[in-house]
Image 1 (cartoon, rainbow, N blue to C red):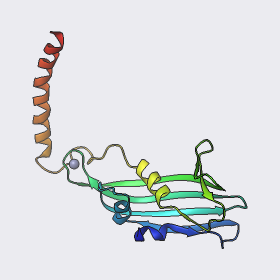
Image 2 (image 1 turned 180 degrees about the vertical axis):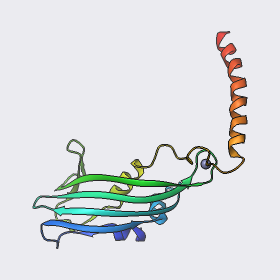
Image 3 (image 1 turned 45 degrees about the vertical axis):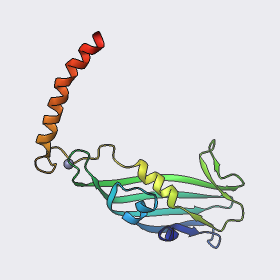
Length: 165
Ligand SMILES: [Zn+2]
């Protein structure tokens, strides 16, 4: 996809050593991976790119926030997103060396597309609890949820009885 082209790092012309790349991750980034959960995104990705003779070392650092739907009230909620991850890339014929947990780029390749690696890291870093902090949900919703919970409580004993038959 066109939008993801900016996440391609051409490295063949770079001298060995440390290089830095900055990227902006917006909602469109998530759209490219068919992730509809993200309503808005404002995340800065800094990549420390170390080129060595036989391999690459990429340190990803994400910082910012994403807006997603609250699991409880379905209203939008901003979640902070901070994470770091280091990825090693070597050159070879296979695409991924599972045993070594490194990414493999074919010999002779002159650039690397970091978009899917970045997506995997950021997705794993999403908070498990996607909801407003306590009592901060949109009005009227808490009440509705507690009524639903009561109903479930009333049904439960009957199910218990059925199990005993
Ligand atoms: Zn909420």
